[in-house]
Length: 292
Image 1 (spheres, one colour):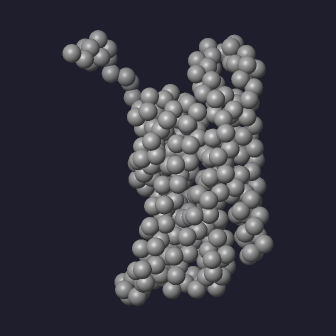
Image 2 (cartoon, rainbow, N blue to C red; image 1 turned 180 degrees about the horizontal axis):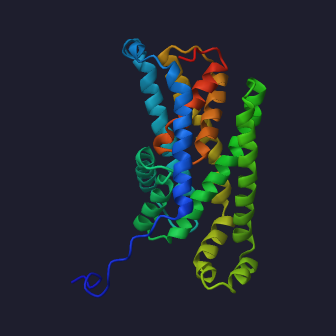
Image 3 (cartoon, rainbow, N blue to C red; image 1 turned 90 degrees about the vertical axis):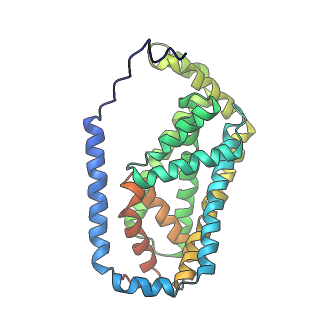
């Protein structure tokens, strides 16, 4: 008999803090503002006809490439966690897809936390380790994305707002990378800093696992795997533009992808509603596509 029901009381529901409420309101406000800039130029009467004229062969290529993107992400995640646990690729991919679906209906990229929770539960990992591994992934993604922005500026005149966004991203990436570096390579010093704090002193398991990851070759393998993971995302964008009859080249599709990735960095409304549409319109207009 399960005694957890009879001997304990249900945990109280965690209240939403004022900061979380403010962040949620801001995310929704940004979404509405972005849609307000895009929707006035939308012509719904043309939509059905344009769908009929789409090249569905290109659409199929886009769908297949999009699946491969997340297969590669799952492989990278398992690779990163290999020093602390042998995670089957299918399990990583499954957790990632659950997180993706959650992001479509929940704001502020809540799916990132959900996928980490599922990975921890399915694999017996501490939740802090799963979250830290996802943070390491995002640091790798941020580094490669910033480098890709530099390349994109050589292909097309990227809007200054996105350049500014890349600069802000670089600051956060450097801070996160510095903290993770200290935890991975200066375990004893970090532990001594935590020793005076009752809450932080409970993170010793996290420090041990991060130390294992940091001294493993798999950390560097996953860092290298982050570049093809980012570049592969160009394929679905290019294929969809070809299927829709938008005449852009593969290098131009690379620029569009970089801008879309930058727009997706900031936690926003479910499915990046508004921010995605505005970024897509802005990027495609750079290459002569009609705003409508």
